[in-house]
Length: 609
View 1 (cartoon, one colour):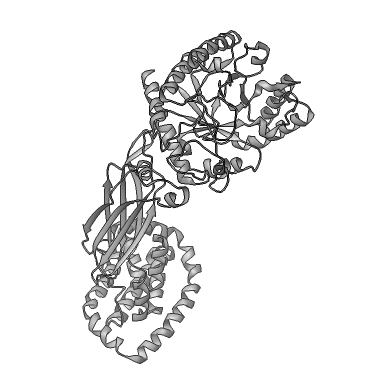
View 2 (view 1 turned 120 degrees about the vertical axis):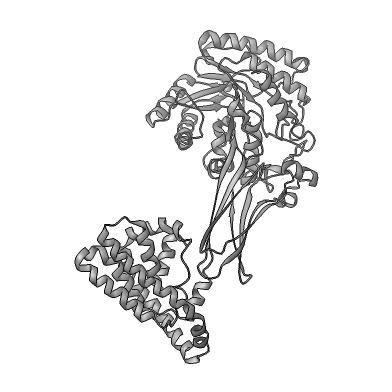
């Protein structure tokens, strides 16, 4: 129930006198109005004095069975009559809105109207109030006393019974809970301020307890096979924080506290428990979004770092393919919002500021994950997104030479797919360069046919719908740079420099550095961007045979990062990959290596500043 509805409720149960006093506090009125208000106040004072006799009369009335029967009938009548007053109350919306603001000044109001059952001087007080309204109506005009006239009518027509009071008892106390970040560093919330506003005009509140409870995610152990040890690496231990307050017994009180030094890496439940004089309790809860564990280091880094991200994992599907290592999160679901939050937290916390998301077509599993889970995640504001267009999954490949001919069929698919992708290009978290939406095209080096015309048509179609594109072609490999091919793209990259040739795999980093030097020279001469990639290793023996593994190590990853940083000409590098577990190129934390690869990335970026 909001405060406006609360005031309407008070009026409907004969509490117009309270609202009249609040009305007086809210407006500055001329002297003539002031005299009017003073007389109104006098009669309200009669209510207060008469209240002292209330309890004795109330107890006697409670014992009368006939009165109970009439009270029940009257409750039903009140419901009908309240409905008939809705039109009147709607006309007073402006006054009620103003009275909501005046709630802050109600600390001194007492329970007189709520407990005014069968008061001996009730009729006298109502009559006095009515005479005052009539007296000043001629002097001030109907508009000035319209609200008080409505109050008189309510007081005359309704009597507050014990049964009505019982209805009210169940609605109080009202608890308004809110929280705001109190200390934030690079998107990481360290402290939160919690405020609880308690309104209870019936039974005084004696104690208020505010707690901050870290959410636990034990389902990941059962569902994803996460280890107990891994669980506490993913979700660091954190105690419940609790603050208790002694209430003053006022009708309205506000309690606030600041919870400091949150560990983060999870959601939190904020809980408020209120205890009244009769030892009854009422509680409310609110859940925070995921709060980061790591500061957003990527936001402060000078180097743009992207990584290939695969949203295709499902415990019932993709994980059935073999992997050589196990994620620290276990065999997770890419649709789990907490998993996505962890990935964004970990990636951006170690220097990655955009995810190159593998895309396999409209309404494919990865597309649904991107649309419904990644782009709706509470941390998406902390990172950027780029589409990784999976050509082998979308276009027809010739069996004879494993090339992609950009014929009419493939061109139609490309244009249709990019028209669909425009919905993502408009997202505020989509990465742009000079206003152009970045797209990475996998294995663009195997395109043949009218490549130039097809790419030009793609650019033109996207320009027409207000989504100009910046195309990064995956064309860099061990062949000599093809300058005609390079000029077709805004930038070029290598998804992977892995090859099954033993002579190349020996002294791999030295050979990669030499080849990147060639491509760097060619792209610089043509004014095209060069985005080198780095990877920790390559080993796809879990899903394929006949490939020589490139052993994975943090030292290899460090060397490749330094090489990539050396040769980029647009201050951007790519990492292959964040979570391609089947080829063992992942830098996502694993049971075996923990956070070591992410830590190496952050160290290299810090060394380069």
